Amino acid sequence: MTVIIDAQALQKNFRVAKRRPGIFGGLRSIVDPEVRIVSAVQDLSLQVQRGEMVGLVGPNGAGKSTTIKMLTGILTPSGGEIRVAGLTPIHQRRELSKRIGVVFGQRTQLWWDLPLLDSLQLLRHLYRVPEARHRENLKQLRVMLDLDEFIDTPVRQLSLGQRMRGDLAAALLHEPELLYLDEPTIGLDVVAKARIREFLLALNTQRSTTVLITTHDMDDIETLCPRILIIDHGRKLYDGAVKDIRTRFGGERTLIAVLDGSELARLAMLPSAEDGLATLPDLPAGVRLLKLDGPQIELGFGREALPAHELVAWLGARYTLRDVTFREPDIEDIIRRIYEKDLLLGDIGMPV
Amino acid sequence: MLRFYFEVAGTAFRRQIVYRWANLAGLCTNIFFALIVSYIIIALYAVRPVVAGYDVHDTLRYTWMMQAILMVVLPFGFTDLMQTIRTGDVVTDLSKPCDFYLYWFSREMGKNVYYAIFRGLPTYLAGMVIFKLGVPLTWQSWLAFGLIPPFGATLGIAYRFLYNIVAFWIIEARAVVSFALTIAQFLTGSFIPLPLLPGWLQTIVNWLPFRGFMDLPVQVFLGKISGSLLWGAFGLQVGWLIILTCLVLWLVQVARQHVVVQGG
Image (cartoon, rainbow over all chains, first blue to last red):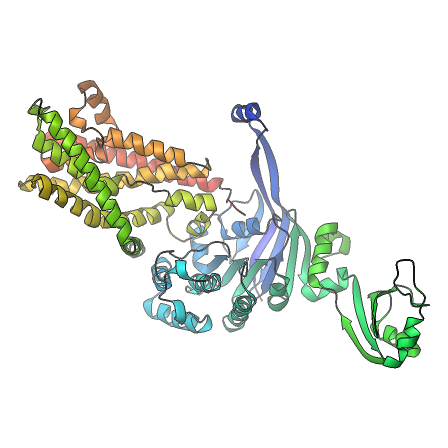
C-alpha cells in the first residue's frame, strides 16, 4: 500500500479581530483593532493509505473542515508539511483538484436553476474528461446513485437527499483517486443516509477510491470507516481502529440477564439501598447493578474488572437464567467522554 | 480549457432563460424609465433646439441606447459572487481546477449575451417604435459599434467583480454595491448624458474608466465620435480594462492568501 495523504505537524492560525462592546468600543476597534490569534489546527499529523476509508470526527469548531481545506489547497497552512497524491496542495492546487473530489455537505457545486444533468455535463469540460469516458462514468453513477428519476429536474427542486446524490456524482465524474466528504449525511433522513453509505462502500470496493470523511454521525463511522481520527481544539486525540476505541476508552459494558420467573419472589426480597434501587449482595468488584425490572437484571462492568463469561458464571451460580445478552458501550457516548475529558493521545500511548 | 469557459457562458445563458417573467418585468422597467426620461428631454428641448451638438433626436437615441445596454454593463443587484463569499459557498468555486476570475467572467459574459438579446434589443426596438429613433446608417458606425461595446461590457464585468469581492473583507457589503452602482451610472452618463455635462466636469470624466462603460459605446453608436478622438478614447478604454483586470487578479490572489471561509 502507498501513502496518499501525508501531513506532518500541520498548523493553522487565524487572526480574529475582537470587537469591543458598545458604541465607543466599536469606534475604538476600527482605529485600534484588537487581534486575537486562534489556532484552529495544532500540530496535526496524519497519514492515509491508498484505498482506506478514514473518518475524521470532532465537535463543532474542532478543526475538521479547516484540515480538509488545507488538504485540498484552499487554505494555506501556517506550518507543517502536506503531500497529497505526491503533490503539495497549495502550490499545485489545480493539478491536485483534478485528482481529488470534494463534497461539502452544506454546500453545493450544482447550478441551482438548471437541471442536474446540465451541471454534470459542464464538469466534463472542467476536468477535460474524454466524451466516451464521461458517458461511461455517468452511466455507472446514474445506476449506483439512482439519478435517473431526477436528473432532468432543476436542482432547486431536489430534496436534500437527491441533491446530495447529485453532488456526489458531480464530485466523482472525473474518477478521483481521493474523495473528501465534509458531513455528507448532514440533515438527511435514515433512508437517504443508508443509501449514501451503501454507495460509498461500493465505491470504495469497486474503484478503491480513498475516502476521508468528516461527520457527526457515528453510524456513518461505524458502517464506513475502519479507522477514525478524533480531533478537538485542533489537536489529534485519537487515531486508530474504531473497534479499539471501545477497548481503550470503552467504560462499562452492560450485561442484560433475564431470570427465570421462579426467581421473582427472591428478587423481591432483595434489600434496597437508600436511593430505592435494590442491591445484589456480594457482587464481584467492579460490577454494579444498573437496573432491576421484573425478571430483568442489568449489570454494568468494566472491561478490566472481570471477563464477561465469569460474570455470567457468577450470576448463573446464584440464579436460574433464561437469557443473557451484552450491550457494548455506545460509540457516541465514548466519543462524548473523550471530548468532555479531552483525553489526549499522549495519555493512551502511541497511535495504531 | 477554453472550451470549458465557453460552456460556462452557455450554461449561464441557459440559466437566464429560465426566468422569462423576471426578464419581462425588467424589460417593462427599462422601457418605463426610458419613457420618463424621454418626455423630460422633449420638454427641455422646447427651450433650445441644440445642446452641445445634440438635438432632441440624438439625445433620445442616447437615452434609449443607454437603457438598452444598462443590464449588460451595469446590472442592478449583481451580488451573486458576494453571496457565495458570505455563505462560504465560494470554496467550491475556489477548489475548481480553473481560474476563479475567468470562471466568473464567463458566467457574466453568458449573461451579457442574454441581456443584449432579450433586454437590449427589445428596449431599443420599443424606442424605435415610440419615438422613431431609427438606427445609424453608416458602416463605420456599425464597425465601431461591433468593437467598442464588448470592451465596455468587459469593463463592466471587471467592475462588478471588484465591488463584489470586497465581501472577502467587509462581510456586509451591500452598501458598497449601491454606492458603486450609483457612482458608475452617473459617471457613465446614465442619469445625464455626458456630452451635456459642463465642460470642466467632462474633462475629468473623460479620463475616468466609467466613460468607457456606456457613454463611449453609445456615442459610437450615434456616430458622434470618430477619427483620432475615437481611437484615443478607445485606447483609454483598453488601458482601463488592463488596469481593472490586473487589480481584480491581484485582489483574488490576496483574498486567496487569507480567506477565512465563512461558516466552517
